[in-house]
Structure formats: structure tokens, C-alpha cells
Length: 127
Image (cartoon, rainbow, N blue to C red; front, top):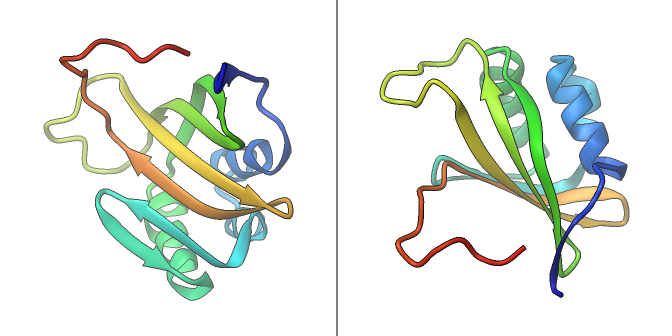
């Protein structure tokens, strides 16, 4: 099967620990220098831009992520996690679960896409 549930480990586990500790420098150590993030349909490219995003929208908003599911999909790591923090929660559900799609190369995150997924009319994909 191409998608399997796995334990949280490696650089993705380091990344989530650093996010939850509001540790900017530790978060940045998890990213490759030329990494990109796509968050809320915004592309954030390169270390300087990623650092600004982490500082303002993760550390600054005291975002925490509680993983509820971790999957391997052809080598990429998908983490569904409960988000909380001091960000604007207008229009969001009481329990906000976002999906984080991590691509990792040489023990560093080269890309991260964060999406507030909606239920599919086509059913739940097999895990």
C-alpha cells in the first residue's frame, strides 16, 4: 500500500517539537536553506521568508500542533494535527485540524504545505 500510518519521527518530529516550544531557531534548523512553505495558499520561499513566516505566524501567534494522524505517502510525511494558538479564529471550527504535507530530503524539510482540508464528496481515501 502506498500510504501507511507511521510513528512521528525524524526531522518532522523535531519540527513539531520546536513549533510547540515557540523556538524560532529550532524550527529554522528543520528547514533546508532553499525550502518553501505554502500556507493558506501563499508561497513562502527561501530561508529569510520562511523565518519571517515562522516568527510572525507560528512563534508570534503561539501556534501549537497536536498530531492526530501521521502517514507516509511515497516518502512524503502527512501530519494531520489539531491547531491552537492566538491567531484569528473567526469562521474556524472549535477544533481546527489542518493537514501538513512534508517533503524531506537529507534530513531537512524542503517543502511544507499546510491545508485546512474539507470533506470530500468522493469519500475518504484509503490509508
